Amino acid sequence: MEPRFEALGTPAHLTTLCIAEKLRVEEAEDLPGPRAKGSASARDARQARGDHVSATLWTFGAAPHSIQIHEPLSAMWALKAARRLPKSLQVEWEDGFLAKFPYVWLRDNTFRRPSLVHLDLDLTPQVVDYSTDRLSVLWPPCIASQYSSQFLRSHSIVKPPVDVEEPSPQTTLPNAWKIVPAGPVDPLLMMGTVEWGDRAKDLGTMWPHLERVPSLCTVDSLSGVARVYVVDAVHAFEEMAVRRPEEFAFLQRCTVEYREGPFTARHRIVTMNEGRVAAALFNNESRSAEITVESVDEFYACLKSFGRIAWENAHTVEIGPRERLVVDNHRVLVGAPAQFGRRLFVRTFS
Image 1 (cartoon, rainbow, N blue to C red):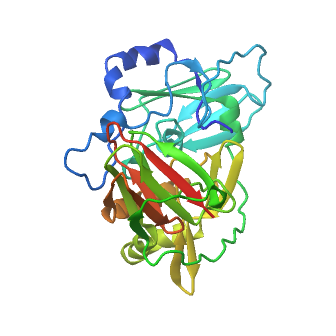
Image 2 (cartoon, rainbow, N blue to C red):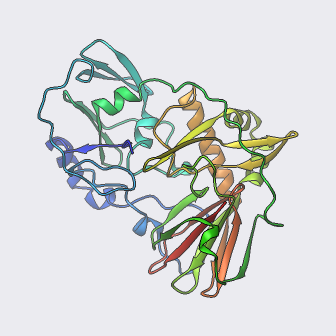
């Protein structure tokens, strides 16, 4: 998979600035939403997306691999200048090509991707530096990020729009989610499985990187009573259509690319049927870095509004050892707070 972020070593002056706040750099934001009493802090346990000061190349969902650059870059890839603008960074390559990258997009495409409600639409970097092969940025509060020249060049244009036709969702559950007794499951019916640890998981559709998104998802606890977040995204978008109609209309027109390993798929965020929201699909963590909308700033502003409404409608569900949570994956976003010692087993079904 193409990395959203490349850590190729942090310049000494950026590292020095970070030492005083090292503990803050290694913390991640709290996920908002309902908290059960006694739950661990998400800030203390949220999954970090990579080491910002190591000389490694990280790919999402994979282990780091050391890399070295042995040959000089061609003019097409070699950076010539980086200029700070009020809302974006203008990058120039040696061949004369110019591109502007909004600060919110640059900050979003690091391993510490913020949750939607923590998006800072007015973010500006503390320090910007560049060399021939990379751009170095220090974000508040002292988060050092680097972006390779190739990564920036390959994301300097908007991907051509694709008319994505989502299949009509079929009603698979009488409710958006329900708790049922845990029982045997036929492996032949499953599309795949994944295990979640005790770190926080942001709300999202399961496996949107597949062309055919699973219709059902089940969650079992392997470690006693476990807490899970669920939100009916169809209801959240219906509420958004009333409270913020222009932003809802923008997201209704958007398609988002998702990527995981070798799999890439593009899906509509909202699927309409006879003027009503029929399905909703979104996952902030597996969203790729590709720019698929004309107005990046408007896209992030609309996502932040949706994120707030989604968390306002989120529920905390407790799953016991002999219970199973079943959710409609075409309308429910699933996440989890940080919870020490928790293990969740997630299955997906077509």
